[in-house]
Image (cartoon, rainbow over all chains, first blue to last red; front, top):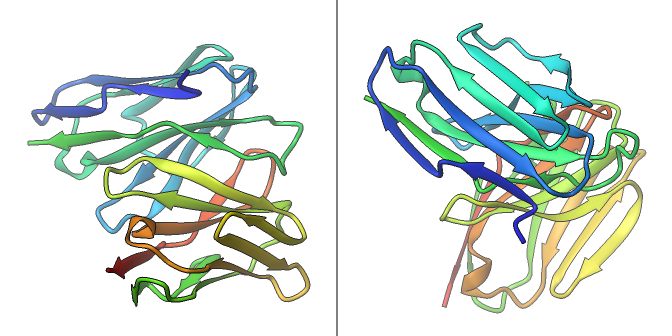
Length: 114
Length: 108
């Protein structure tokens, strides 16, 4: 059973489109994250949600809107896609109350904006 | 300057060699993670450390909280160990800061 699953794995789209990436975890974790990995393989946090509430919102354009319908899901919606949005996006989850516990990552979604 | 620094950036080794990857951080942490990212892109958590040392198979991770330094060691390296290894510092319940990664290539 996949612990953290993201869909789609690959996404190619044109500039200006709106797209969503879905993330689901079946670990019972109460905290979920979105990370962006740029072309230099550097990972950077975008958002963090705890019990469906936004905890961290790094300096991310407001074209990016996370949506958490329940604790097991954190979807990432991107409006008006730009070339610079091309990257690999990783979803992860962990227990809020146990900061020393491992975070589990999804397999990543490679977004290519053309 | 990044809050989490890794070295080396790239590392090439011959099969069987002992490998060390270093991570230094400048922020207060509750735990430190070592992650492995394979060429296919998926990320796997190898270790989570808050003190001391952990061992899993040929992998060993150590951390020195006072010196704000952690190392990942691979004994008897194998080509299948080729991957990017990422150090991640958990600075709060919700926030992790990542190193830039070390690209390891193990040649047969």
